[in-house]
Amino acid sequence: MNELKTKYISNNPKFDYLPNTDRYLTYSEQAKYRFNLIGCGNMGIEHMRVTMLEGRAIIHGVYDPNPKSINQVKKQFATLSQETNLVEYESLAKACNDPDVDGLIICTPNFTHIEVVKEAIKSGKHIMLEKPMTTNLEDAYEVVRMSKEYTSIFQIGLQYRYKAIYEEAIHETLERKSLGTIKTISIMEHRVPFLDKVNQWNKFSKYSGGTLVEKCCHYFDLMNLLAQAKPVQVYASGSMAVNFTDFEYKGEKSDIIDNAFVTVLYDNGIRANFNLCMFSPLFYEELVICGDEGRLKASENEDFLPTKRPRNHLEILRGEGKPSRITTPCYPIHIEESGHGGGTYYEHVYFVDNIEGTSTSTASVEEGFWSVVVGIAAEESLKQGNAILVEELLTNRGIDLK
Image (tube, rainbow, N blue to C red; front, side):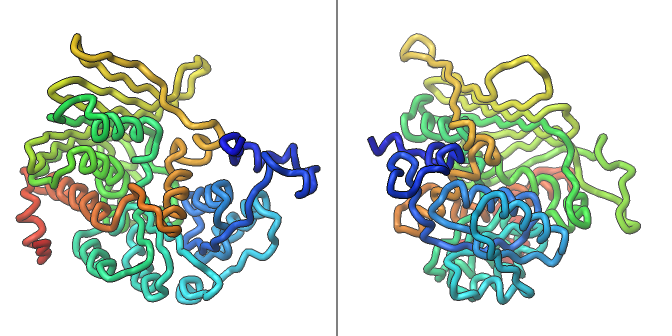
């Protein structure tokens, strides 16, 4: 009967009337780990919510220099936990080095990551660092160097690889080899514009790293993972066509692009492309992989229409030689609705698994680095108007990975 024990049942408030002695299917183990939340914006709240849903850990304390963010996270915490003591730290150093804490979840603005990591890594605690790792190559390489001798878990928050459609696509292509040898990869994201942030940092490339780093590192991570190779050349074209063209904040004009086409060539011959539009009236993602034995298409949509249709779709077409399939990969509703289609939930499941010694497929610091490399190369290609050779880019920035 253990397979029937799920978080949906054990966390369901309709069973709160039961004393612990009468709980079996509804029994929940006490949290074993305590995490501190560094950064309490939308992503911080999502990480807190998912931590509590996963159940093996609890958020112990929070740090954020913005008082409104602290107030908001406290309100959310009160709805998720019966504990009343959510520690508020007055400094980053104290939040990182509290001896009562096992791990740190860092989800501060992109441009602050490098300084937060420098403090966090002193603690020796387990670290989950939100994407993108950093906003530039020099800082990304510094994080790689700092992590080399780090003995605790250091995980990068590239959770898209755990969305249902991508989880299945990775399984079909890399494990089942359903498509044979992969030749091309194509990814599309069409979505609404960037949302508001504290100090509107995501509207400026110097703080976000640029759209192709801030948002698209998720997709470049997927490309790198599916290609199982290193990128050697990147070409991008794009513009600031619609969004924030007249937006100013404290006298500074926004400079982030809202559309792009990016082509990546890998050292094993695989070619990949990415299509971005951020002035679309819906959220839509699509992945198409072609191999020498078949074609896979996966998509996820969230529009604003009353007409019901599946959120997720995956199809594998393999001609006459092998069976084809059309499926709807999905997670339980309470997991899909917990954040990023369930990707954040499983990122946390595997973070705790990693802490407990189980090897998982979470993004390593090195994988986080290469997702930033492709994003930076694409941003450079936009500025220069030509293809960027990755090895040359790294050499010019003083980065030697050999």
